[in-house]
Length: 467
Image (cartoon, rainbow, N blue to C red):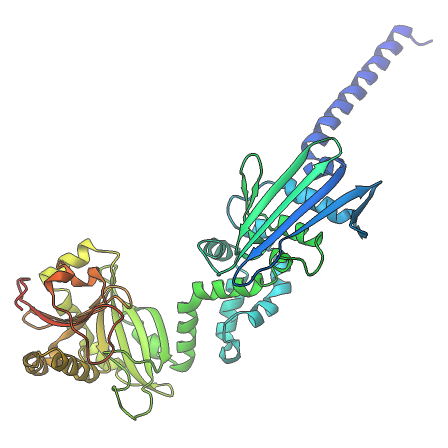
């Protein structure tokens, strides 16, 4: 016969164990059950979507109201699938992504695989003439999550078009609560969203997609909310990020072995084969000769200040590049000269964000094309006397370009360390220590910049403006 007290004690222990297990299970359920499962139990009463667009033409704003009609959602007479309503509520309940990234945009490996081919077609990239190494580079980059997060920040910043989209969405629930957000701008997905009440910013494309899914197909802003042009825009942004490497890969393909030879003494930062013209290289002004195709490379080497590079231009004839060995033998003399002038050394040291390029074209720094344009420019501004001095020392002069493109200043550095300011594009950094008012600027004979012009000012070796 069992002891009644032991039976009661054991039963009580079991009951307490069951209660404890139930409590733990409930807490676990609260902690780990998807947040949106609770949100979906809130019964939606209405969803109001307002959409407007502004641009060069007038488009009438639109408003759509979806109502819960005895458990069936309707937009006017049209039935709306409840799963689309639930998708919007879930998207609004997602944690807000404060910055654009692959997670918030829904860019998964599956999405990339699905959209890569279309992205190539919609982009501005010339894939028809790309070699396999370039295609492989783009594929790796387009599927690199870290790189994509970088380019997404670039895409969703600043102004992009001359039109503007505005979307508002408001959800009311049968318990009287509500949730609303607005989006305003010109970006794909009309991101970011801002939640009413607390102003939280959300780069959550799921909200945009969910709103679009509730709108008629031809509704205002629907295509932008879906992100119809986003994959092509993303491809262009990726290409902007890898364009230098893309060009290097192309140059490797066109001039086999040349970059390898240059790398024996230099780091090749950029390389490209093209027929472009500039004051110091390319076809001569007014010439009927065919375009001059060159290998253009930006080089640096051990011991260079971080803002100094060589701008190398070598003649290319269908992959046969001339002058590589001559540059490797004699290029350093121009580097040493440019970096030995005290006023330039000080400028380079204290202006690390201003690019300084030491030019080498074909077989010397101040080549025949530069000499021709310089002579024409000096004649145009009444300083022909400078031409004879430059011509006499042409082979030993280092041409140094300071400042960014379109604002750069051209300096001729002589072996005795005096300099001539040839021309400048209006940027103050390129003038080293002098203000623009110290120089008389006149229109150049060729390659006249938008602002600035030709000067022909002489600077002594000790850094004084002579004339």
